Image (cartoon, rainbow, N blue to C red):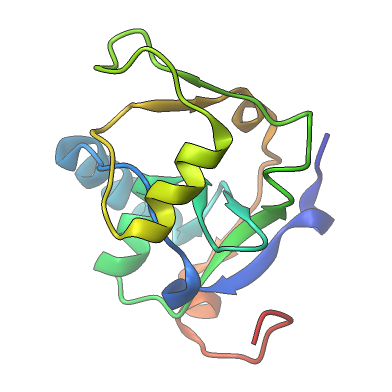
Length: 143
């Protein structure tokens, strides 16, 4: 569905989470990211709001490492019918809509970990963007 050309580097500060993370999972991924020397998977982000649809642990790592930019695939979340949202089986809620995800992103609040499940996230291209590149501030299309 996507390939490496669809990945862009977006400002960390522009991104808005909608879901908490599991610290233990983040810590494991942080160690792997340091070992790899970069990000190997992009986030999926709503291009209108900066809402994170997939990649909350990667976003948290970017904050831990004080990165200026993060690799992301920016999508038209509300309009793209290929992107579907559901809830994880262990979630505390029965259903979730795209609009509710965006509202949570914009509210400054977050759902518990593993609430939303975006099936499109299964089709991310493998990448490698070095931490050195992500530390640098650079003008972007989004500014």
